Image 1 (cartoon, rainbow, N blue to C red):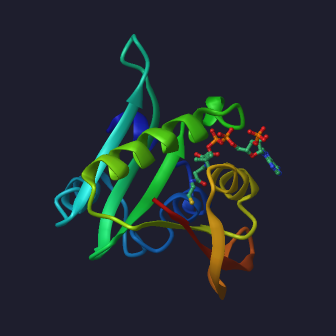
Image 2 (image 1 turned 180 degrees about the vertical axis):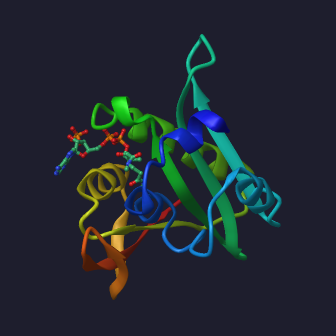
Length: 149
Ligand SMILES: CC(C)(COP(=O)(O)OP(=O)(O)OC[C@H]1O[C@@H](n2cnc3c(N)ncnc32)[C@H](O)[C@@H]1OP(=O)(O)O)[C@@H](O)C(=O)NCCC(=O)NCCS
């Protein structure tokens, strides 16, 4: 938990990772409470030495839709494929549940690493919420992406 929280250094990191989930406040107790949400499954991606490489969640939002949320990769391991490998594992977990037709997720338009990572895994834009989040001094569009199971 402490390792994961150490990756969030400022308000912009928090918004990039979690959107408005923790818009009132963010701390370890708040995060632990968040993990108790109904229909939320959390996943850690660790190496053989148990070092945390990535974290993410799967939430059931609608009957046939699983949503991948709050994916984050260790800051020093970004841009080299860890996010894609981890998301493939999350997709496999969803597929094995055998009760979903769609997987959805969202990202900000300017989050190019996230956009490319998800796009390479077969996610396509289905909706845009213009100027949904304020980040790095400007309003950013939120892109909702989806792929068939
Ligand atoms: C978003 C995130 C999870 C993606 O994981 P990752 O390990 O960095 O992603 P990957 O390396 O698997 O894939 C990123 C792709 O974008 C490409 N990329 C990297 N920087 C880029 C840029 N500035 N512009 C365009 N593409 C870029 C990479 O080359 C890679 O594509 P490739 O496989 O064709 O080379 C990770 O960057 C992260 O933790 N970011 C901070 C938290 C966050 O934004 N979470 C997502 C919330 S939606």
